[in-house]
Length: 125
Length: 180
Image (tube, rainbow over all chains, first blue to last red; front, side, top):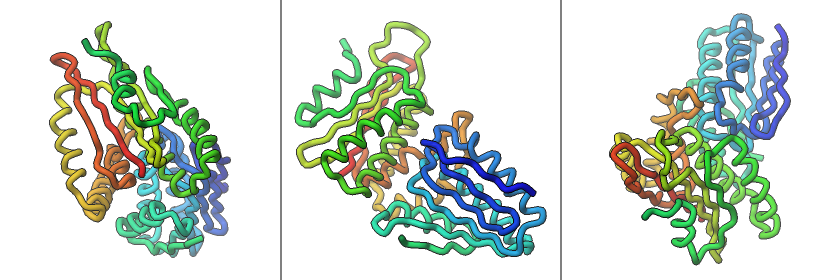
């Protein structure tokens, strides 16, 4: 299947999802008014990828900040990955990157790890 | 007679330095305009990155909260329009005030929700946020219903609010968030 590549914009992050390596990355800010428009193709790609995923999958989240509209879509991204993990087809983990002084982003990562059953690795930079 | 939102609130904030005001229908360009202005301000004031980030997050949430919920009453001659005011005081405490119409039927629940949040400890707010996020559904305009809760959690200061009665259908909802 094709990789998913979306360029970063002022309100949306860059997306770089590689099907053959199972390395998925979100990077930048995510503050669109209506995040569903942006995340819908992301959801579709993950659902397709889940049909025959790489044996391991890693989502690298390198977000500076995101709004509450995006927070709901991010949860849906993690839930989709959780489904792939539970299917046994791929071993999934999330690497959550945050700045050393950024308590809000650290807590956000911890919140998600409490809500979905996939390993979260907290990466302090 | 009621004056307009910006003037009413500017007069209450005489001790504060007003950095930005907008009055009218809030659209998707406002966050960009405030960001541009505040970027310059933060540079001049040498404000650390984490404080800038917190400000931007709360500002985006506040503006988008109005964007998702603002109503335009159908009849003409109403005294207020939606608005946003950004100010700071001598100690560089920032404050964002927003105003928008709300239907009277929503006032009771919203007021009670804010009172509940104001009475919570940071840990309780966090648990409440996690619970709310796990069951959140996006509205047609993309709102997750988490905006005010997120602002309360990030600002760690009580939310100040006021419902100004307009007529039998509408009130004007004013929300002030401090960013210490």
